[in-house]
Image 1 (tube, rainbow, N blue to C red):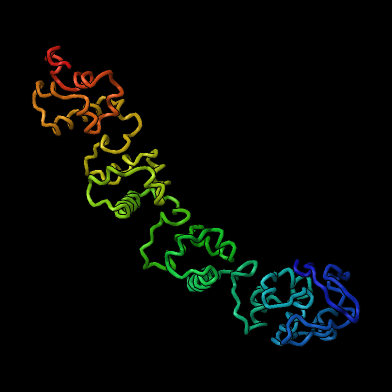
Image 2: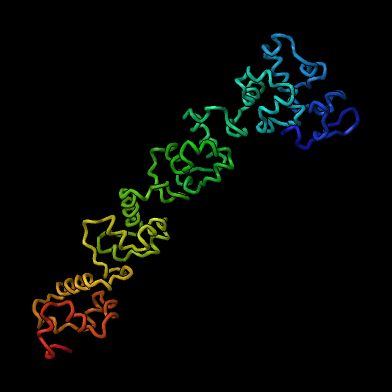
Length: 356
């Protein structure tokens, strides 16, 4: 409870702390006389004889008077050791109830916050800084915008792109934990609602929204953005794509979805294009172990070298594989001829005369 916070007040020449209390839970100064300084320089101290609520039940209609209610709040601040407006953010309904003020809270709809705001109307209160924001406060979208404007000022955000660095912890540290629940605790959702016209890249936030990568349109959006960032202007340029390109450009989580394979990412996002896996810097793991893939490569190589007959294939040498992205395939065979006899129909019938 706030009244247990350490504080020191000078009462008629003696020091006393808030940890010293009487049998009814009140600090001893209410019995010993007036404290020499109030919590605020601009308001008068509430004397003991004015605090009639300490003597039992107040007269009928007493709490109906705004002046009396505000006097109680000022007196409560004295008891709780509140020295500035900011200290009021620690107030709770229990502080009222434990200090003879539970009966008047209904005048403020049982809200300690409303009591404080009604008493000190000149202060620009930030409802989210109280221990608990007023009931249904976050149901009003206008309050979302008020909070985000204040939040941006506190974090020194000047450009929309600065929002990419904001985290869930930043919201919690600035009274926005409950606010963020309105957006399923998703930072990017809150920011996009605040600035809906900006072209946001969800992958650039500290965390992408839950389920974001489940949608192909989002995966494709990222790939198109990545290609533009890397300067890829043709389909052939994509063959230079590497895992490091993903990791250096906010795509590490997406790449994990494809087992770390840029090839799989491209085939998923651009399915209409025929991709030749052997033209990438690294073929997918186990690619050459599949006979269908080896035959696909040989067919492609034949077209590229304009080979039409078995005799034409006899002219192929090892360096033709190496020069045409097939060097990795050769590791599975003793010689390139073994590859050809397995994958080129009719080549075995040519016989030893064709073998190198």
